[in-house]
Length: 230
Ligand code: DC
Image (tube, rainbow, N blue to C red; front, side):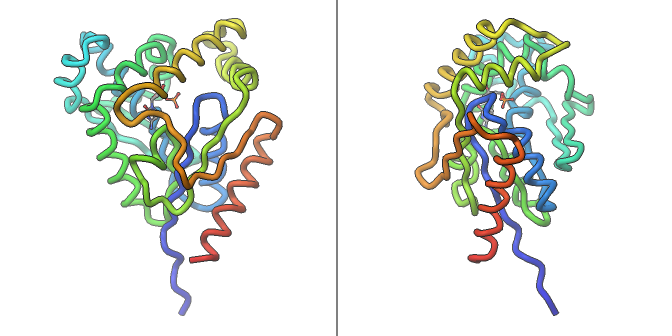
């Protein structure tokens, strides 16, 4: 009798605009794995804080509220979901108001402790394994992941992708998008608690000149190699 392969854990980190979400979802779908967008969890926490009158620039106030919202993530890569206190948060977490406040909220250690515990529990419960995307997955959340990928791309390519995503919603011009994105990168990389950082054993993939299909193929091949080697 053939035994089912052991669950595989894939960590995909990197700054925004590198194609992390599209890549992670496509890789998970292709390999029959679950998918977790950890940025969506920090955004959901931020949305709750903004909606409940918490001053997001006051780390003590944010810390005091960190365990209040009930965050639930659906991990089907074809239709990922996120709810906060039972309310669908998938649209409001993408607004500019949330994007502008999320770095401050996610820099608060109590927020990170709570969300990291949630992430670990979701990853360990995924029956066939999971692709988890974020900033600190390979370094802090799942340091024993079977495969760690760090996606990079030039600031120009990243800003162009972000503007494409925002088109029709809250589109800003390219230079404004580029500035906002670099500002968020600096905040996310320089915070004390679990910053955006490449793990020493991560495979770096520069997506500047690659299509989504090429990046997905590259990551799928790396996962399959790991699975064969186990
Ligand atoms: O991937 P994203 O742009 O949706 O992430 C939103 C913010 O959440 C990002 O600015 C930093 C934070 N984040 C984090 O601190 N750690 C993670 N693992 C994922 C996201």
